[in-house]
Length: 494
Image (tube, rainbow, N blue to C red; front, side):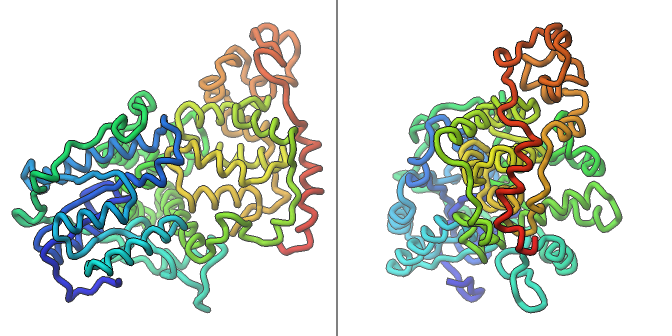
């Protein structure tokens, strides 16, 4: 149902999902305004958990964030017998049970436009309606969603720059205003003794412990706060530093945005006024936040992009298949392509669950346009390994790299992995960090070892084909093959 300001409830339930914080939280804010008592729950959805490996960094991040959220709620209430209810199972069944046990009249939560989430929420609405309970959801994950930013003709945008310009014209202080969380005494309800359970451990829900601190990741809103405090000091340099993987340029907040341990409104409240004053770093970073909104509205209006190209003509492209394609893909996944920047980037994602944004573009271009492999293969690999995986952004990024998406790079723009390496990792610092077997190579040889003089290779104790692979493809030849591959869409206006 749509939120109705006239509805007031004795007991409500806030269902946390991809919004794991207790500050600037739209659903919690409105639940407190419209309820005498509020309970809070997170449900480990077994349909999702069953598809994941037992050692999963994302589940570990969620778990750590729930511990943090539970403490935030207790602090807000000032009572130890409040906090977060955590359940595991099928969401409709879990909610149905809680409604019965707690006498819940309304469930407050946030919009989620991913295909699975839409189906889940439709089922939940039906169950709640049968129980006489309301389902009330709000925007929270982006600044503008769905059809809030449209063309003059009332159509969704398919090109980023005009979308961005309209976004900037449209945004007001009210759009970025904080959703204050100010519970009155006893409003965050005490959990009945019969329902109180300690938060389950990772092992309790069937997963292995992950050492997030060793990956330099701190979960929860407290972790986001530390990163944000550090990034605010560097935001003015963001434009100059963001493309260099060995430099501390990014905010590193992507996983916190993904799971809502920080409010996107809060980030925009910081960036927008600085951007309006001409701060180029803040302007560039705000642009990245707007890209998130853009990709989410693309997913909302064009859900077919999950399986198909945004530009239908690009589904006519014939990709490499068969045994050789699988071998090439395995080499890419495992960082055995013979191109150091590509291999170092793949080592980064495999070891840490994170990949620098510039490198995401480089490795995606290499897979699609050097190896001729369907972008969907790479998209799925990222979905399995990125701790900050977000369907809308991941799909948008891969379709951008393959030239099949909205506002994508032209099909004839093909990243050269060597020149990208020389430009964005000129001293080879990033490569040496993740490919220690190449550490002794001089800067002028580390980007393309196969082109170095034999004495240089020998002096660095590198044996091509043994300690480090030879290139699995010749970039110049691959480029020509790609131009031929994309000729099926050449007649279209790219």
